[in-house]
Length: 371
Image (cartoon, rainbow, N blue to C red; front, top):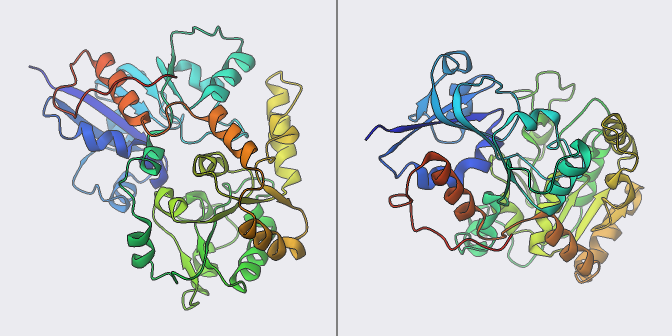
């Protein structure tokens, strides 16, 4: 039997986090050849996620080959050299960067949740039954539920103080306007570092010059100043999921991790970023939408901080009263995600169906969850 060739396309290391739960099964199937390309330095990128010995191919060389399937979490790879092009998306934030016109060029859209489906229908006037729609979910978040993560083990590996709560700061990617990192990053780190908490700092790949050379600040150098702080741990891992899992509270702004964290139903403190919200509102207006969900209700699931002088007391209050905003968080989780805990089986089922292969060698065929 001819092997099926799959090409995965990444922009930064975190792209692979979206594909990893699928790759873990696909690589066990000797009927498949999985290849990896990237928008920039593919060898450095895949070496950073432990795939230096995988089937790697540069972007331009990849365009000379033919594939049975191309799987992308972003939109840079526009070559039509695959029988089926699948978009798996790299986030589900209310910025709605995922709801891009370029997505419409894909044969299948592995939608993250009901909200994303609604936005595609609303923005591009698509029917509810558009044949490109597949109600999948976000496979990387299955780890929240499948027992693969152990909080005690991860905390011990990070040498965290088990008597203290753990807080993680994970802002959105930097932009031409201002994320919370650009506006208040050093203030946030300084304020939380003074509190009796374990403090994890996980920046977006695009905050570092290696993955965004136009960055003015050198965050590698800035964060190195905290290397010897007894309660601060800077996370350079490409996959944020284990660190969200062990955290009692998230500090963010309008990042996709805000919605992801609602699946854990834990408190959040969100930094107000009005210029960035206005920037994304203008993008949606150009798409013909009058209202901005991000502006109207996008930060309702967390305690909003507009003045950094209030950050410490807001974090303390939320840690002391984790039940605040619980109903809103749970509603966000229902609205943003299909198949929590079983998104990877849902995605694999559809991948094998599109390849025309039975799922006999990549794990058990899952009972399809209700979407």
